[in-house]
Every structure is written in structure tokens, then in C-alpha cells.
Image (tube, rainbow, N blue to C red):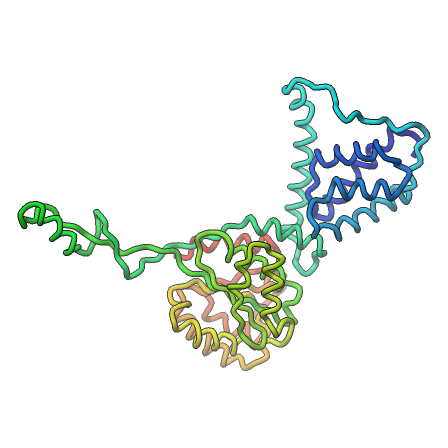
Length: 373
């Protein structure tokens, strides 16, 4: 680079490359990075690398995306052989204080521009297919997905509670209150049925045909199981059904997904949707888990078993569940038609048929759940 003044745009350019790969790099981090390079030798690639890694990366899972972006940026910057023909200006460790209003006015344009770039990158990731995402982009999507909050409509249960406007007489409280007035009933007490949120049951297909989407769907299930007031049960199926609800209750997403992967023994194997739904109905659904619940099946519908058996099991599940939602990643393609044997057999018993190929489609699913009255 011909002069020291030309070094700062190049350093800021690394922040742009990181944002392209899905990392949220703020203006403060770029200022810290520029100061660090100012105190080091900018012609030494190791100094620049470690200054960038210490200033711009805050999570271990972002290291792969950082490595790719740094190599790409280094190639454009001349292999980091940034020879400066003058002394690089040294930034003081303690700058003179400025009035708060002046600092705010000076930084507001940069902050607004930074927020705009981060929001733009997030919007691009929301509409990118999971199967086309890099590991770094999947990590960024996991952060966005963790902000989702599921809500479902309430349902009336058989249990009752004291209420001022109930339908059922509360004889015990009425008699107890009458004892205060020498046995004369002056005011009758009532009870009303309680309302509780409906249970959500997620049945996730982890077979080989769903390999590009399984991790993202499992991340969505972890968000549903960990956050909110919605009672959630999660099952994975390929050739057999496995309950992973307990594994996904771990606070850290990576640890939860690792435990779930250890629990599922048929990961990326064959697909037997009918047998898996039969197991769920017999062992879990009829015992109360599916009664009045919203059942969400995430699968491409590529069944290796008999479609007639799948249709019979879907009919049993439809009689138990409140609503059945089928999320199919292949539906994200405008040319897709549900012509596969398993998908066509299950569709008559599905209340809502959605796509599930990107984050935007899962956000649409989360927005739809409260409307399933």
C-alpha cells in the first residue's frame, strides 16, 4: 500500500467480508481492530491475523467463517504484505475526552450504517436454503432462530378453578360462606374451567434425504423446547422413532444437538414414516400426548414403506390431534408437486401444508401456530 492513510479502508474491508459470511461485526470492534494494528507491525501477517481474531471474533463457532473471510480478504489485500511507506499513526491509549453530544453525533452515522449492513445480511440469510448454507451461515442462523418465541392458542381443560363468572356451582365454597351468615345463602360461588396452552409435538425426519435440513430443524426444535410457555415434545424418526425432548432441554444449543444426535441411532438412514407414526400413536399419542395437541411433521414425504399404511396411521393421528401441520422443505421450490406416494397419501389428513427450506418459512410456521384455534 502506498501510504499509511490507505491502510484504514483495507482494515474496515475485513469487517465487510466477515458480515458477508454472517458474522455480526460492530463499529466498536472495527475501532479496536484498527487500534491494535496501529500498535503492531502492519507488514507482519501474523500480527494482523491475531489482531483481527482477538478483536472481531467473540464466539468459538465463528472461527471457521472468520478463517474463510480472512483468507479471501488477504488475497484481495495483496497477501497481507502490507508495506507502508511511512510510519503508521499510533493511536493514543487514552484519547482526550469530548462532550457526550459531540461523540454521539460523530458516531451515529457509522452506527446506522453498521446496523443496516447487519440487517441486510440477516435478511439474506433468512431466505437462503438450509442446504446451501455454509457452517458459518448455519451458526448465524442458529442465533437468529434462538430469538423465535412460539405461542399457541389456549384450550379448556376439565379441571375447574374458583371464578366470579363461572358456569359450575361451587357447593363447597357456597356452604362455607353461608356458615358466616348462620346458614343463609347470601351469595353463591362459582367455578370455571381452566385454560392451558396446547401442546406442540414435533416429529422430525432425520433420514438421508433430509440430511441438508435436519440440523436446522433440530435447532428450531431446541428453540421451541427451551423457550416460551409452550409445552413441547420432540421426536426424531428415520427407520424408527426416538424421543429427544430431554436431550434438547440443555441450555447450550451445541450440547443439546450433540446429545440428540447421540440418542438417535438411525441418523441419515432410511425413511419409514408410516411405521414411525404408528409407534408414536400406540406408545405416546393414545396415552394423552397427542390429544388436543398441534402435531408438526417435518419431512419430505419420501416414504419407503407402503403409502396405504401411512394413510391409515395418519387417519388415527388426525382423530387424536387438534391440528396436523406438515412442513416439507421441497415445497420451497415453486415447481414442486406432492406426487410422491407417501406425501400424497398423507395430505388428505393434513390441515396445513407449509414449506420448511429456510428461516423465513420457519418464522411463518411460528406466526401461524397462534391462529390454530
